[in-house]
Length: 78
Image 1 (cartoon, one colour):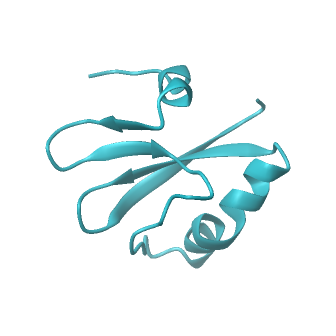
Image 2 (cartoon, one colour; image 1 turned 60 degrees about the vertical axis):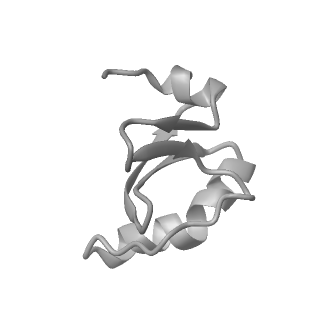
Image 3 (tube, one colour; image 1 turned 45 degrees about the horizontal axis):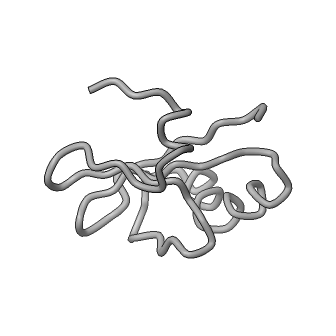
């Protein structure tokens, strides 16, 4: 299934399959455990993604399963 970022902006959460979903990061979203092995990327998600959203610098999407955050991506230049 190929979906555009605009699709995710319209919906807060999209289920890819039974265990994986993509969600727009909001202040209410509880980020599940995440460690990609790169401290700067971990720090961005856990500490900087929401301030970037508030300043309209980037929108972050979380890819997760029932237990943990699998990854994320951010869209800039809104």
